[in-house]
Image 1 (cartoon, protein in one colour):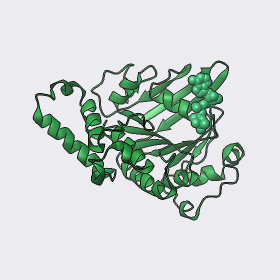
Image 2 (image 1 turned 180 degrees about the vertical axis):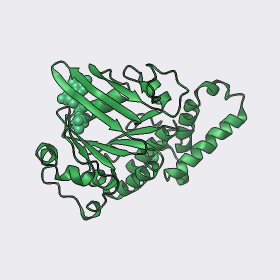
Image 3 (image 1 turned 135 degrees about the vertical axis):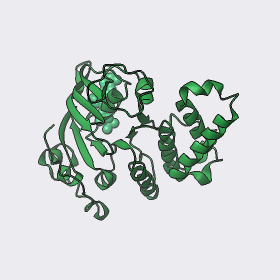
Image 4 (image 1 turned 90 degrees about the vertical axis):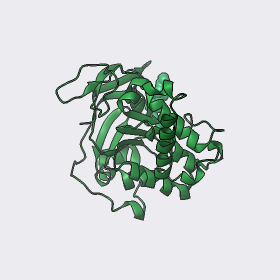
Length: 282
Ligand SMILES: Nc1ncnc2c1ncn2[C@@H]1O[C@H](COP(=O)(O)OP(=O)(O)OP(=O)(O)O)[C@@H](O)[C@H]1O
């Protein structure tokens, strides 16, 4: 177990946005969270990353990076209770969320955007970077290797505002990678991206998924069905089903609540691999 929630619940003035969710993310897993508008997906991410505090329930995380002070007790498996952790604390522990565009400095170069994120992650040693030329060079080298990974090495010196939508989404993923996360939470990474750039964004997500666990909120069902190991379905705050993409697609409860007539494109119909988890009621 890398990340898990027990009875996670968030109420806003009479609305239960997240309702008693028991969820577990395993190491190396790419899990998409889908559901109709208002199902509670963003609220779920906000709870996991400490942006919101739950009304009830708990969240545990078993990070590999233990620099940060845990906010709750360690259990025997090395998991930390992050139920009341702030976004800063969850990020330090290794739970990173890519925010649409808000993390990008538009007039600053692509390389500098990533370098600043690398430097910020280096935390305690950043105060001495004015004196330490090597640290600066290390941060530039780390930024360049991230840019290569997200396919933006050729755009390193361009101002971020001059990137295409798809490239900006990739830069956001790069900035999140600079924090050396164990879990990356991506909120609609293909939103606003042209259809020809969607493949490029999904290729990068799949590459990053090789050595990170990923949680993905995504409305593009071809993307969801094509790249997810597992799909979790929220409806009115409840986790109504989870399983491999094909199983979720065929779930009657999911069809009723959400997918409607989705039958998939030719490219996303034969991608199911991995252990049989089955579709289970949440
Ligand atoms: N800060 C808030 N105050 C009051 N109600 C809220 C707040 N945030 C979310 N909600 C409500 O909680 C419910 C879940 O919203 P949420 O944004 O999590 O859904 P979502 O699945 O992300 O939707 P979408 O796909 O449209 O982004 C909705 O009814 C929403 O109106």
